[in-house]
Amino acid sequence: MPDALQLLKTRRSVKPMELGGPGPSPAELDTLLTIAARVPDHGKLAPWRFIVFEGGQRLAAGETIAAVFRAQHADATLEQVEFERKRLARAPLVVGVVSRAGPHAKIPEWEQQLSAGAACMTLVIAAHAMGFAASWITEWYAYDRRVLDALGLAANERMAGFVHIGRPAKPPEERDRPKLADIVSRYGG
Image (cartoon, rainbow, N blue to C red; front, side, top):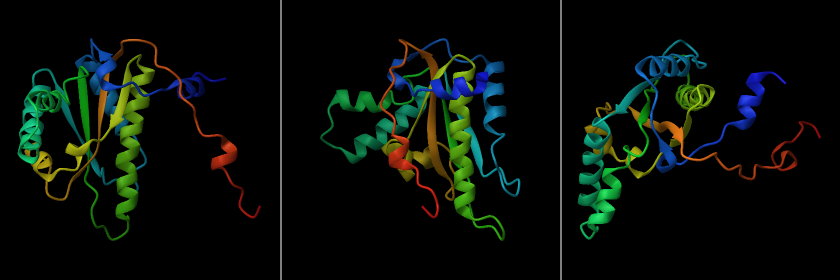
């Protein structure tokens, strides 16, 4: 079996809180982002972009998340606010993948959004290929306009996901996968 197929068969998401350092070096990060930008992109629109959260900037972004959370939940405990503050600080590196999909004469927005999703998944696979582990997630703050504005997203941009990258603290556990009989049909049959 080619190495690429084995790589795909063994990819597994790892919870951000189970990712440690060291994270990717600057050169490794450039490689990861270069690979993530090689996804299908009908019309060569690059309907996505990347925001890198590393070092102390992970907690700086977390301050924004915590402030919005506090504003929405006046009765939140200090522990809950601290949990929100550390959302982007659990893994050594987080890459926000921003969807820049918009109206186009020939390229449907849906295709542009799928391209942003492909950038997320390709980043996750590339991280696995480089010996890291990753988790592509969205949480409430990925959909909150106040957080997105504070992170520098334009009004027409949306967060396709946050990809947390690091080294797994332990080997990832396999989970049940759908049985092909449950998810595959044959046309005309």
